[in-house]
Length: 330
Ligand code: NAD
Image (cartoon, rainbow, N blue to C red; front, side, top):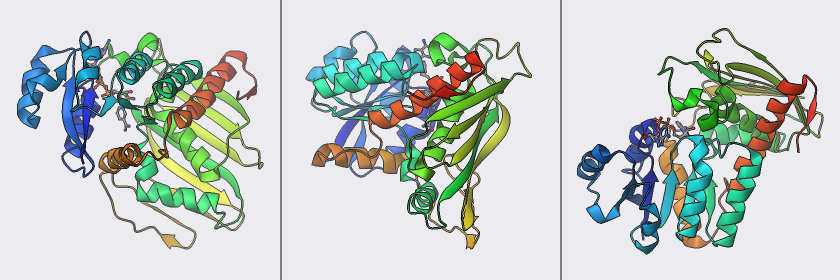
């Protein structure tokens, strides 16, 4: 059986990546849409052959509870809306995939996890890189200590923001923050999945070269994470630099990716040579895996708890910017 997915929020990522990926999935398909823009109902239903009965808006969304075609809702909205739609989705009896960053803060993540548990529904975060072969190799090399204990990790992710100055990404109330929330979560994740550990402390500082554009959110942040084993990760996020590297130095060698976090084209290697893995449609692999987890009642490798762990680090980075001090990650 193929499970039916309804995308909630038909913006850049849903239209540019998820809907095309859902044409390639084996265990799930694009069954429905939820949109606040009436004109998108017609274009999407034509392009993807979606019946009128599987089209909802934010107001009548809860009626989706009665719709047997929809097994999973996939939230692709501004961050401030993730909590509400995760909770409404679970209450409607649907399994939920929620995009990153999971929520405005870790406390909201906990409420989302609790709501899905209470409704006995599975919750997953859109962490596509956990299904991407080059990143999976970085996890293996680090966690299995193939080059010995990992000592330092450099993780940086960013792009030069050239979009709409009025976009939700630049409004803290909607985004929760700037490049750290949008891009930094990948660098935090990278350090976490290379070490296989949870960081204990963080120290952060920030830089702003375009204060008019980034008046409400962070532009560039630098942080240092300290892990229980003694490993240290120097991380960076930016809306003013094109970054995309993940590099680990271990006792007996190093391994790296660049680009590390992109939708495709991953490249990298180790002290012993270049990686040569297949390039896949990450979102298709991610959604197919979740559908299988739902069908087989198996835990997803990227549950809500995984999103919350990153948000705890994000929360501590913002606290460190405020205090100017090293902060405990709690
Ligand atoms: P977007 O701005 O392109 O789309 C957002 C959608 O939400 C639009 O369709 C918009 O109409 C709708 N919306 C509803 N209420 C809104 C409001 N009050 N203000 C603004 N828009 C509103 O954004 P996007 O790039 O598609 O990002 C959506 C989510 O997906 C974010 O959480 C983002 O971090 C995530 N994302 C993930 C990846 C990934 O690689 N996993 C990539 C891009 C985006």
